Each structure stands twice: as structure tokens, then as C-alpha cells.
Image (cartoon, rainbow, N blue to C red; front, side, top):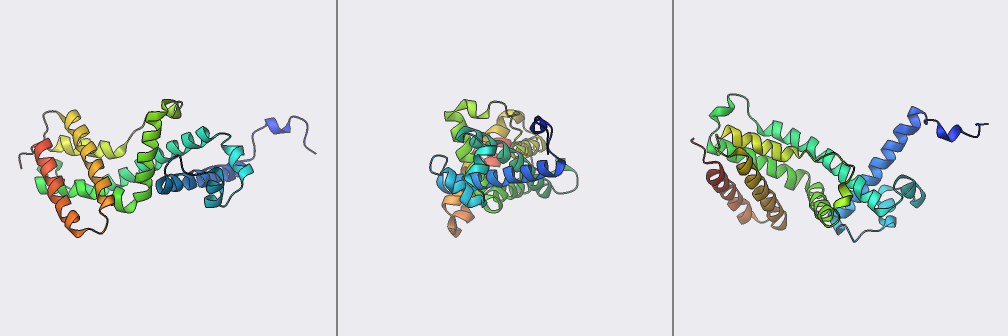
Amino acid sequence: MPGKNASLSSPPARTQTRGARTRARLLDATNALIARKGVGAFTARDVVGEAGSSLGVLTHHFPTRRDLLAGALARHRALRDGRAAEAATRATPPGDPRSASLADLTDRAIVLLADRVHQERDAFLAGVELDLESIRDPDLASGLPPARDAFREAIHAMVLEAGSDEPELDAELLAVALEGLGLEWIRHAGDDAFSGRLGLAVRRLIERFLAPGA
């Protein structure tokens, strides 16, 4: 029989792995609900129903709603950066990056945007909701490492390739504009006319913000 202080020792690796998987499942369920309902419209029962877990397990890992939201924010950031980094790799053609034309840069920007809107729609929406909540409640992100945001890093790399005189400012402007277009793309899902205008809008943004010499 375990001794009195057995609970103070580290659990076996197998238990830790199972616990990590359980936490990830609960956080993924939370982010899925946030994408569908918003931050304020889901309950603890919704989370455990989505995750196939129990209220006891949920409160063991996340004693308060803020703990759950902070965990969801941290997981969203980690997954978002991994996906954005992969999308940036797919969007970057081999060869000399200095030879990128306006058309090349436009195509790459649309690849990055399409990944957010179509491949990771729910994660994108959950991120918007969590970002808004972290503005309302700045303590939500306390203790979390600074957000990396690989999407903006990819945009910054494009700006540098285009030879911008103010890469930091242009990257910020272009990233914000693309994120706004991403929300519009979701709102106009299935609208072929909007999809056609989108390419022109992205090209115009890059032409104005980056003024590439190609």
C-alpha cells in the first residue's frame, strides 16, 4: 500500500502522458466550442460532452473557467504557430527569394490566408475570440510566453523580400489587412464573386504596402 506521502512524488511517465492527452483533448474541445459559440456561450458540460470526458476530470485539470481559457489560449498559440510555419514553407518557392514578383507574393499571401480560412477555419475563429477575450481580461495571458505568431513572421519575410523601406510597419499593416480579409472570406463562404475579388484585393494590398519593384 502506498505510503502517506506517495501522492507528493512524480507520477509515472505513462500517467503524465495520459494526463497530457486528456488536457489536450479538453482544450481542443474548448477551442472548438469557442469557434462555434463564442467565449461566453459554452458551459463546462458542453466541454466534457465535446471531449467525451467528465466534470470531475475537467475541474481536476482546470479548476476555474479562467484556467480553462488560459489553457485554450496557450494551446491555440502553439498549434497556430505550427500550422502557420508549415503554410509558410508551402508558400515559399525554391530559388532566389529576391526574384519574387508581385504575382508570386500575391499567390503566397493567398496560400497563407487560405490555410487559415479553409484548412483551419475553427482555429482561426477561436483565435479571434480568444484574442478579444484577452483584451477584455489582460490577466488571461499572464504567465504565458509572448505570442510568436508565425503567420506574421511569414508576412514579414515577404515584406523583406519585396524590398520594403519600412518592413516592420508594412508587415504589421499587411498582416492585419489579411486577417480582416480572412474573416470576410469566411463570411462570404461559397460566394464565387467574392473569391474572385479576393485575389485582386490581395494584389492591390501588396502593391500599395510593399511597392515591389517587380
